[in-house]
Length: 298
Image (cartoon, rainbow, N blue to C red; front, side, top):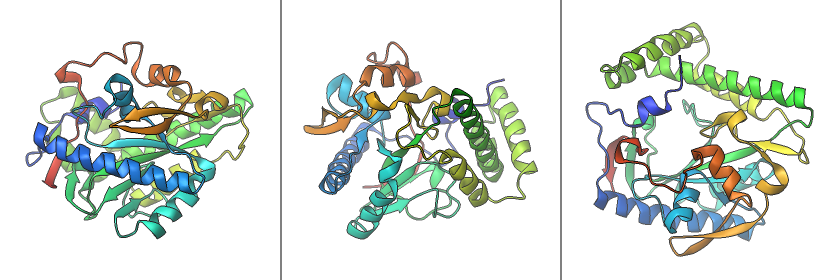
């Protein structure tokens, strides 16, 4: 059985949840675009290269703008620049953004950084445990890997295992909400039973405990010159997102919403890994990834 919950939950709604309409998305896109410009400019002014990633890069490739139905934005950062970038955001943009991280945000349970705009109330399903809810730019750290094939394989297994345990612990925490959302799906209820059961067995550790444990596993390698790098917090996890360092960290620019941003040098390999051979083709409406919102005031 496939225990991935990405497809199960992407269009599942709690009773009080909703999807954004076109007018709301247009307003949100304007905020996200300005956030991307501001965050990447701050990085470049301080010698840090943030690159467009995920669906944000895909939107730039397809038509030079954010994907029409997308409701957040994605960047990646080299691990060596991670701490310094967080410090810059918290010291120089504290009046504008909340910065949530797996290191120090309580009850977070997410392995990427979320930069949240303070100017509006934008509450998603995942924000049930936080009042710091705004338009979101996700920043995914790119981790070093081992040059030894055996050690890299073991690292990947450890990352997958830790990520699974964290997911199960969150499932147990959120089991009531998820049960209501997946009640009409037999497969969804089976997944809830399995992952919720594992989450119960490891509930002796809090969500914070498992978040910190997973973060230590993801960052176990400190070889800044390794041949390969990986994004274990990405949509395809460690094994699905392992790339050659020299091509991934090459610098080229791509236009998005009238502004040039950095992106990976080997865009095709990156897009193939994430979305498959037909990544330039827009999916039908029923396969489009959308997030559920609980509040939206922008």
